[in-house]
Image: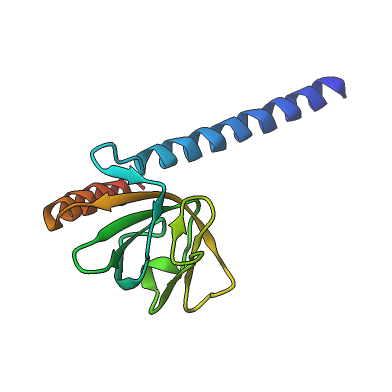
Length: 138
C-alpha cells in the first residue's frame, strides 16, 4: 500500500514539473530582447489595436506610437474580439496593475505582464513574424 502511494505521489510530482516546465518555455517565447521594454504608457489614449494570438495585442496610442502588450495569461476571446478595453489609472497603463478585457467578456480581465515600445512598422512586422512562428510550434 505504501509503495503504491509513493508511486502515485511520484507520478503527480512528475506531471506537475512537466506542466510547469511547459509554461516556462511558453513564457520565454514572449520575451522580445530586441524591443525596448517599458513599465508604463503615460497619457494613454487608445487609437487602435491589432491582436496576434491569445497572449499579445498591439495598441496604438496617439499618432505613431505603438506598443506590444504581452498578457500574463491566455485570453481565448482576444484573437476574435470586436472590442477591446485596456484599463488605466489616471491615463497611465502600468505593467502588473492594468489589464485587458474584450467586449464579449468584459468581466474577464487578463493582467498585462510586459509592455514593449514598437519603433516602426518594420519592427512590428518582425515581431508579428516571430509570434506567428510560436503558433506553428503548438
